[in-house]
Image 1 (tube, rainbow, N blue to C red):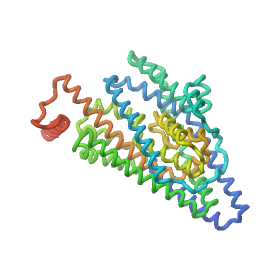
Image 2: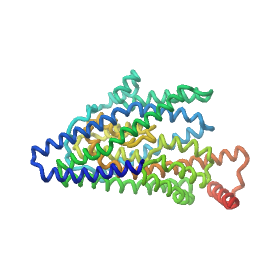
Image 3: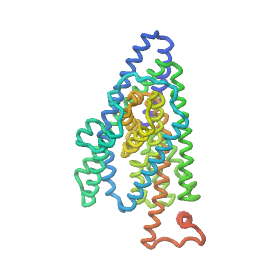
Image 4: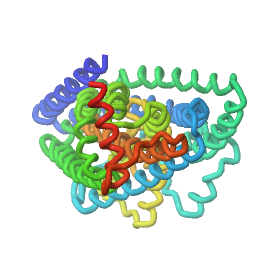
Length: 436
């Protein structure tokens, strides 16, 4: 089904380009404007569908992710270390995407003009308003207004409360939230079935209005994003080497297969079984992987975080919006916060961008520009999410398992002169060889 969806989206992309070019070359100006108006209307209808699911998705996925931590052993220290890693990685990767987008100057000189209103608030957000509205005065108002930051604040408190209740026994509310998350993922899947229509309308409108000039918009953005993503992979592997030593290269070899699966399907879930298998083969205890990896799927989305900041800078430049550095940093921080708990959501990164950027004066219609190429970018960011979670689980898990083994008195003596990490790796390799 995932492959069918991908094929339909790619077909809509190609058909939209061909149709748009035909409309641009064959229709007179007045008729061309009418066609663009109709196509923009269809695109905005799809954007409204995305807006409809934002609030319940953020709330359900965040609360379920936090409350679900009670199902795993060793929540305390392992949870703390995991969250410190995930949040630190999000900040650094988000900053990396922000900086590389500015260095490449993506979108500059395109001078895009919003084709209409997608129904989202576009009033610029000043600093005082940003700080004041972090805490919601009413959770229902936050939900109806699709305010992601306020939903996150309440959702985090709600999830922590459920986590404590769940430690004492079964919680019917927590079970209901889990079911709500499943329902919302289904609803999101239904909404995304309309993605080919939205893709066709968005790209056909762009090419009808601009002709072949529109291709330069997408080619520069796609190329810049994948160049930046390649640089990010180098940085991530370097970080892995710093923590794991030479074993980092073995880890990369092990996770190549789940990364290819994720890239081909644009689905982190499709790669999960192979990723768990690979991390176990690397030597991480299953109980540790079973705790850290699901958390990482919710809170450690490196590829998605980079995409969101990169895409936001692209829209700022493409629309020629005058936004000072402080406002851009505030927007990046809001994207970071809003990205948490969106794992498993189809086009989750696009949903977050659609929720956040209009509040900073970026036309909501710009989401339509991103939509037409989102499938091509989703493959790269999903594979990056897999790599980031593999590294995080390996680093956190290796340290946690070593400490657990020491407490249980089961750690083998390290080889003479070998660093502890490398000795543990040698010991695990020896055990695997013995079994074989």
